[in-house]
Image (tube, rainbow, N blue to C red; front, side, top):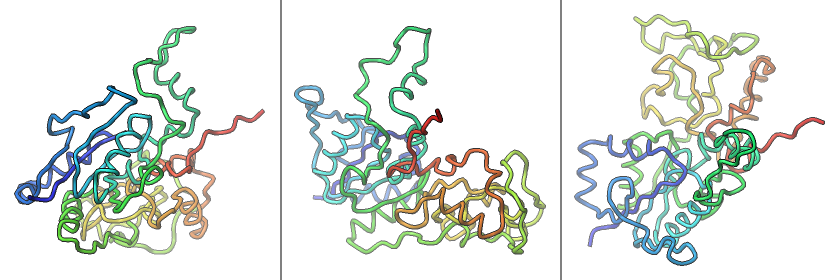
Length: 304
């Protein structure tokens, strides 16, 4: 009997699953070795018993389970716990699962305020649907709710890395995910003399389109807020990181370099150590746009 794979998505956009499909012929080779027993985005497989009694969720057993997306409501939590119970190895699949991702930006507001904003209507009318599952107080990464065996960040993860992670589990081999920052793998030229302040990314970086990226000056030194120093690398494989390859600053989508890191605080420290005035950053919380879970983004206190 071939090893069984189970896929599930929670508070996500399906970009991670599309990245898996982008593996091309290598994916066909994987499919010859495994049996996919649950994959809601690609095959019709219902949660047997869902809604039939106290929110029961029945999922098939699997050797490997991959879950994308964060945990935002009671249904997500029930499905995630069922995946954890039925899968020998559970992989958090993509930055929404590992660090909250873009959906965790919701954590800046109390849930009732967020719902009123999303379902805004005429004054005096409550337009929040009663049919949607009960919302949690914030968006959680999946490791905040269940034990996770492997964390694979990325928005989305690089297709080749997805296969490498799955194949390593099938072969029961140790896996070494990238541990360097985007900055450490960036070929841009650093002179050690940057701008005194950072500016919003509203203008193009200075570079010659006819020259390779390793002739371009460091974007942070150009005064653009590049989060390469505090963001985990791996998006470009062994080549230039993808944002830098496009001549734009890193936005931080792979989450913090170090486990438990705080991209906001780490970036403030990086700017200060380079003599850059951090007060020019208009919205500091945007530095947590991909990593607002783990209690890092919280509702703001209103000044009295």
